[in-house]
Length: 163
Image 1 (tube, rainbow, N blue to C red):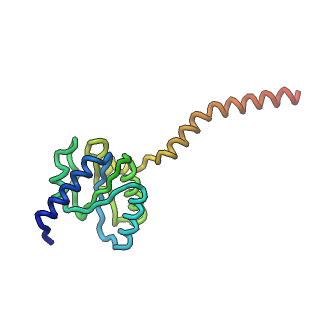
Image 2 (cartoon, rainbow, N blue to C red; image 1 turned 180 degrees about the vertical axis):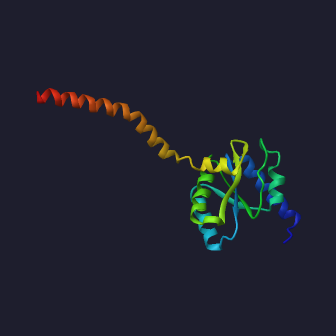
Image 3 (spheres, rainbow, N blue to C red; image 1 turned 120 degrees about the vertical axis):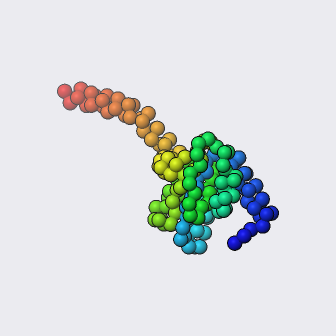
């Protein structure tokens, strides 16, 4: 279906806004996804602070081509962009839904810190644990030596009291 020049201009402006305000952009392939699943996915992404926008690939190429370092990934099939000011949230959300909907949703590539990334690189980024989990891991790393010292001192104290 052909779209008017004004509509194309509006889409290009939206893509330019996404390009300039987002820390991370994920190109998402969504083939054969039904309306109810799409609506649920969009709602969950919105609640997580991730935007989701569908546009024609030619308009995406026009808006993003040359805007970032590296080569833009090949965009085949039906493509959308997931974007956010949080650097890893779009990739994590898309990966989560890719697990739920099997082959219907997939990461095709993306932009991370101003550089185009491949499908594999964006999937690795999606594997980074969320910030609260990373903070918990850091606390455990800091706590481990202290806990070892306490256990050692406790063992010494028990040895002295048993003698």
